[in-house]
Length: 304
Image (cartoon, rainbow, N blue to C red; front, top):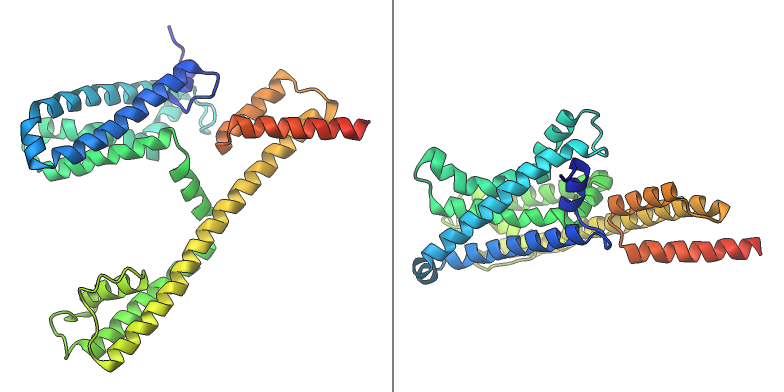
């Protein structure tokens, strides 16, 4: 029988040498992508009506797989020693209420809700089923890295967001005052004018609403310039945080490898610790192996 620890390894992002884990990763990842494609195709009336039975069978198959995966993750999370809880019960609760745990639950809810609540709007069910795409976060660290990068620069990001909100409210209020008489339908209130301000500040510019008075056009031009500056500032903060985070991770694992190689040999415990850091920082095995090789050569040169 498979132990909790081994099941956790299989269900988590697989390493290069773990064939079973990589097969499970690829199978579940492919199933998630196929689910998203099926949801999109099912929304086309002609396709949805013609292949209704096939879509239903595929949905039931997916729910069985995702439901089994969810239950196995709850069971296996009892062996997760990295979550900060000592008891298996606490570890399981930590997974259930984590972001990925809630996503895993929502992935199977669309097929359970009709049994509990009766008739449910199909559009809402399709929207819920699309959340299955977030299950990819089990196998890709992109979303997790983005959130972590924003957290690391939360002060700067918050300041830039504050500037954006000031620009949004000020431009909305000024445009409402200037354009309300000329276009009472398009600029009927400050909240409605915020649509124009948001589209202008983000430099999208749909063109469905635009100022016609000279002063309004000047305000529109200033708003567009402010949008370019503020959006560029937000983008730069996130990009810088992302880059700094990756540099810090590489520096930490490089320091750990250098410490481990100080005696010229990597013990089994040291390799396990390095592998744990590699998984935690979502670095590739090739990158870590290259670091070990470079630092080992540097260590030899220093001794020579």
